Image (cartoon, rainbow, N blue to C red; front, top):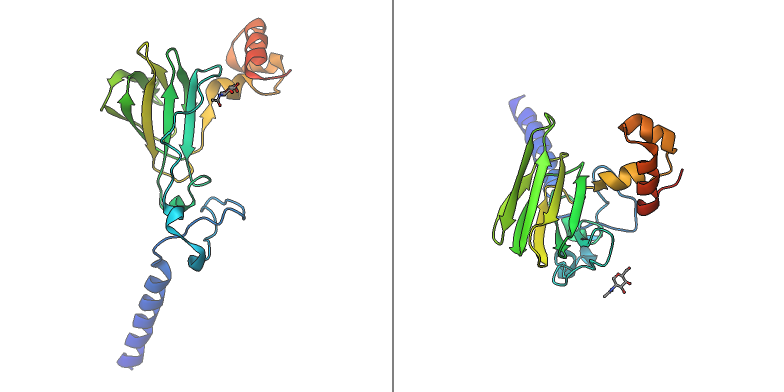
Length: 210
Ligand SMILES: *[C@@H]1O[C@H](CO)[C@@H](O)[C@H](O)[C@H]1NC(C)=O
């Protein structure tokens, strides 16, 4: 009586732990991304290059309206991250550059300044503000989902590397979300308390219509 029961329990334990132990699940980028990530690439086709991303050595192009560049090393660029709860990226801020208010719905962020000086901050759900001017070697953490920004604090180019607690943190930049869309100006005005002339002006600059 006892022995078969023990065998049953052990076999269930063994098979379930066996099923859950998988060294990695490199993303198969051909298929769709789901809330659980991408499907796994066939292990025989995995190479070391799936676990290495070489795209953060060069500065991003800051010739744009924000005078800044975000170079992502998310799972879409770096398939070895799939399922591991991590990703990274690089920020380049020319003098006067800014990463405007934005959120990463899926991850907390940690930022390391490696060159120049950056004023960074976030706003809590209670609308408390936490900001500081960071120098080379400083780390700052931004809790998941909260609005935050990084803005050049020096008259020189600044660089930071960022790391996220998700292989796909998501990125929604508030100004583009509010004014880079096709929501009619009266509705934007009604939902933001901003005057229509300002909204029209921002839509023109940020690519919105309506
Ligand atoms: C940077 O972007 C600008 C605007 O899109 C473009 O004109 C320029 O050629 C780019 N520079 C480099 C080095 O790619």
